[in-house]
Image (cartoon, rainbow, N blue to C red; front, side, top):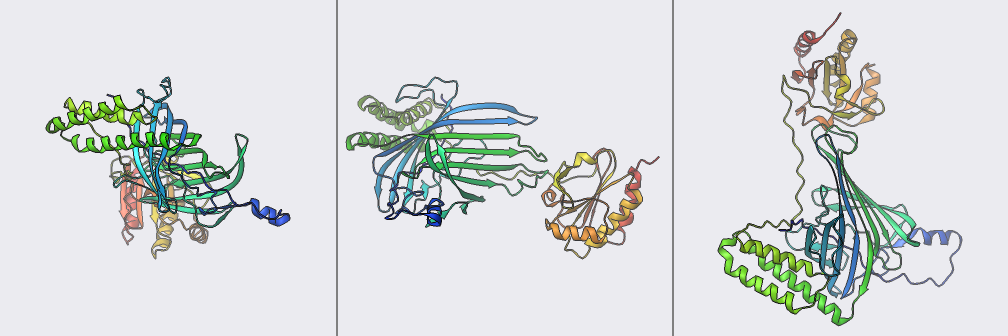
Length: 497
């Protein structure tokens, strides 16, 4: 049975061009005209309109690569997505999208059939009068961050109303994720034609401050939009992942696709496509409730298969025929008693948790930004000598006393011990000010990203690590006995001539 990876994608659509001005602008007026773009659907450059019976086809490739020490691979797929407008009115448009992936090594199939497709997905979409897309209930339109583009709406961009200036930025909110920050870069030639270029960036909160207890990711989208039609002519997306405590990306996914055709079909051809799509959706929706317990629904499965076979025999194929054949293969597998799993929702990325440190176990590795200098530091740099990690909050009343003790350790044992301050606040000016006022001789890093892996629930917290990287002591809070406890344990692990 052909494996399936459910995919989705969406697209911007044709628009009305801006009315020609009644004057020839010059000087500053000309510059202002070149540096703005209309965003309202009535003006139609970045929020185009869709017409009933319109079809758009995008083709390109998707590449995923991993260079981590544990897993290394590189895979390339052919990517194709089509969009057909079933209906259009003043309240919006009803669309259907079909997305397919094929192995790059696979020879393309015939015009209408794709038996070699590795993944096929058919979905309903609704686009309201403001141009915002939504799917059926329970179907998320969030872009997949880790894997093939299983749900893809990146070809359509939400823009603010009115006119947008070059270099203007705006945010698009996504449920459960950081906002996507967009910027209108300006105009750029694409295949000899001038397009508006948009760039969007979305990243996890710890992308610029690597953590030792979870991965970080960054997504960058670039779109080239035709100023005459409002259609996205090209989409490029790069998603990078970094493993915990790594500075360089260890995984990279790249999607590239271009608009190949944009057609408004005459009524009869449009109706053929519309009927095939409605049948495919009907077959799919009828099959889904039968898949969980196929043994109890044999009669219903056989009836559905007869309906599918009749349609395939009696109706001419369209580019959406593979969606029906996918339902046919799933129904045949269920009729044989196989359990068919259909995943059509985007999984929610759960934060990767790590068990807090324990005495006698290796200290979690980390890469942290230096607040009192430039660059970053990682745990491996300090191996060979005992290490005293001092987590503190620069606004706490105990901060100065804690840092004073850390400086006394640096002064007394500096030849044999590393001392590192870890501020749980990223208020660099305050950290630097305290560092200078107390004449501290050790670096201070940003420790907010290590609070989970080092179990820093309150501050101050001191952690003692021996020269081999093993945790030898944890001290929470600050009291009269804290200094003597830390020094007593520290002397056990110092190797002095």
